[in-house]
Amino acid sequence: MALNSQGRPSQPGTAEASALPTISGDRGLDHEEPLIFELGRDGKCGVDFPDVKVGDTHLGGLRRKGKIGLPGLSEPEVVRHYVRLSRNNYSIDAGLYPLGSCTMKHNPRLNEKLARLPGFADLHPLAPQSAAQGALALMSELARWLTTMTGMPAVTMSPKAGAHGELCGILTIRAAIEAKGEKRTRVLIPESAHGTNPATAAFAGFTVDEVKATPEGRVDMDSLRSKIGPDVAAFMLTNPNTCGLFERDIVEIAKLIHEAGAYFYADGANFNAIAGRVKPGDLGVDAMHINLHKTFSTPHGGGGPGAGPVVLSERLRPFAPLPLLVLEKGGIRLIEDRDSAPEGYKPFGRMAAFHGQMGMFVRALSYMLSHGGNGIRQASEDAVLAANYVLASLKDVMSAPFEGPCMHEALFDDTWLHDTGVTTLDFAKAMIDEGYHPMTMYFPLVVHGAMLIEPTESESKESLDRFIAVLRGMAEEVKAGKTERFEGAPRLAPRRRLDETAASRKPVLKYQAAE
Ligand SMILES: *Cc1c(COP(=O)(O)O)cnc(C)c1O
Image 1 (cartoon, helix red, strand yellow):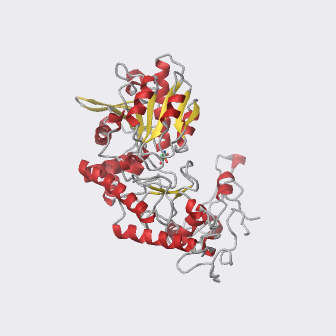
Image 2 (cartoon, protein in one colour):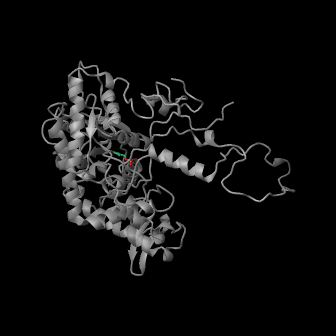
Image 3 (cartoon, protein in one colour):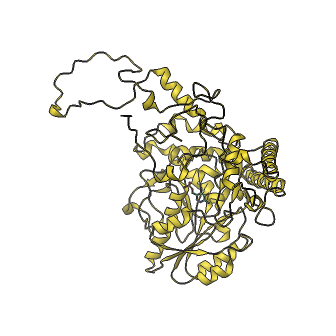
């Protein structure tokens, strides 16, 4: 396929780009939209500026002589461009988004309305604390919900994503270890873990040691026992784990970790399965990030914004990063420097400028208050029910690697695709032709050709039935040997199969005008 200077297929409307070539390159209401730089023309502008006489500018020889390089477009052209681009987005507002481990749930509009309240939206991060008491009160109320729900005594709010929260938690643990004058260099991580876990541990200077999984998809206790030792800093565990299974031995795991003098980090990305039902504090967790953009419905995708507050145990609380939120008689105080920290606190530093993602805080608290404790519990139960419905409805045609019910996500492997010529990738890409976003593929790595489906509580039974019917239909076609449509799928999308590896290894991030 010919690629233009931006690495995109250059000839829309060719047989490769489209099952039905059109003269315009558009396909019905799907427009083939060039980059804004390709659309723009020199000298065009959305507004009429008065002619200015350029006199002496004080810039001497530094005055710009070349073109400024911005695209010139009229207002309707700009509006059309972005509206057309927005139509190429798949979003939770457009359809079921089965991406496992991502908790793509509905973003209630009430949250959006509250996040736009000028008192929150227009507040400047450098406003004096006396003028920001409402925002600080909101943060402190959100903190109260998070600590109550997790059964943990403290929370640090500033991390801006799950992975950022992991780093915050591990740095807190590192600070606690250093304060004790100990030398602990290893972090244990199960082989089913999300890639951010080992990345975080390595980034914080630890070596990563992998703990094996049992054939049932859970932590292998013998493997854990054989790895634990006085040089272990922490064990990082997701519960429910990335196979969608609850780690039943978690209390025993916490005991083992603590007896070795290490800390128990829980990856809370899957909290949606247990929120309102299980308190990680009761399980012996020392630190856990919470993805507000997953469990608490703030929008995500495309890299953010997110928010990853970290709840901490009593042992780790003193090392939490700045800023600290302190409730005092006269109001709420935000402590921004080490010297003002209360007695006993030794913050390890700070994770981010300012206080965190305020817009996400407002949305998350809005979600919590509108659901109430019971509503959050109901949401978790419905999410688990929906995933089990998908698992039970498809496991006779697709293969499930583990016995028994799942938590909030249904995991399939590619055993059922053996000798069909169709791969997990082909099957997932063919879902795009059916109007669905693919599920998470090839993760977790412990399962061959994994397909991880997380419907969340947002989907109605009708929506799940339709999704199940489509996947069943596709699976039955594969089994009947009708596999052409899977080869090189998607066929009906604006782009066919892209070289995603090349796109991420050699991203073209800068526009270069054609010669
Ligand atoms: C999403 C996720 C993360 C990372 O969270 P981000 O907000 O994307 O940085 C970590 N662990 C698991 C299990 C996840 O699903």
